[in-house]
Image (tube, rainbow, N blue to C red):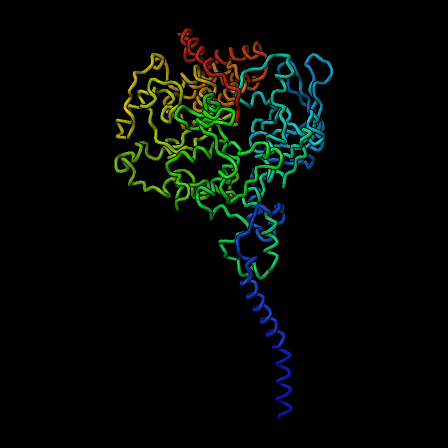
Length: 621
């Protein structure tokens, strides 16, 4: 019996002993890991290095895949793989300002040759090595040593418009007047160096690498906007989590100091991650940035390395701001009027409360890992939902009257009134990221800034809008100035279309083709827009042409017997063609669509057009 019991004990020891020892070792390992300060505490993340997005994939597969679907990932790519280059490069050519760009080589070996249109030696020859953009239009980069050494890279002067599947010259992608015919410097105006310009916001951990010799030895941690652009360098995080026990214990650890998680940061710090690129800024030490990058560490204060540009910002060469260097980038009330200033719009909004819990930050409305790459709006935050997640609809002013707050019922979203399309960028009107309340009364008698109401009510004056606000019981400024004489000539949008500065003209063009435009039928709006095809700015001609195409698709916009002629004319129109060629088609469109806004009073149109000269812009997105 004793021998039998001894055999059983020995069997149990052999059976359970290794398991007990294993559990003991795991327990000791867990205890050691839990007590290891290096595995848990914060660390100096500025000393960490880029690990690359592929290093994130094994632990974060869902986040990795959602990031791969974004346009951020494809912001900068190396040419070669067939899916990267979106333009055909199949021998097509584009003529502009007396030069011809010919595109060859296909997606695998894209090449550009620019020659005088009448013949002669090439002005520029280059092989495309990288692309920038994959959403609205795609730009192309080539390695050209123009004094910056063999690693110098330049953006080429033509781009592929993805929506229209058509080549455009970059002079027509920025707001600027027409260049001089036959002048190579004008044609190559946007042949710009990538190393100290585009590279800084379109890549992860960019370092221009400017040497004392003037050469560039540029490096990036990863092309495009990858994981570490938002979360910070990941090598220390990867090393820390190579320990499976650390991963087990820290599965729900919200405070891992080896990496930044924007969703867990305060509104101010989290928004700084986006503001680094979505808010043009002034660096504390420009020379240092050109040598070794800006040194920003996501999760730390953006203000430590740079400050955002505002209307009254100054620079070291003009400390008092007397030259108003940035005035053209903002409306008179300080609201940004160009894209790439979304961060400034947020900072100027009353909902933004920096470090306060519940304050508004970029992450409230946007999600880098959402299901929709387009605009990356967070699920559940579409339409009014983003605002109603903080504001009670019934508690808003006038919420209990017919039509509710604003008096528009469900036809108008919060965005349309409080974040109107008063920002220009990427050849279109964009929503303002400065949250405001409409106040057309404050702008009566002024023609230097658009308002939310007349951007939708395109047949109305600002005086009408101010009176309508009062009639709806909405708060607003009572006009203190009499309307200007021109305000009786046409609606506010038409006045901007014909006599506004370049940004006002672009926004008016965009407003007239928007689905929410009300008060004037599509046919009337098309007749108004034909005048904009004569604009001096090629970018604005492009916007007018696209607006006319959108409106022409509406069933009631064009008389049935005129539809074929309008469609053909718009298909033939080239925004970069010589003026005489454009005018032939413009006359055909006028004959088919009817007279423009000032056909009966051409002197009024001329007077408004003279006002355009008050502001000449050489600025883009």
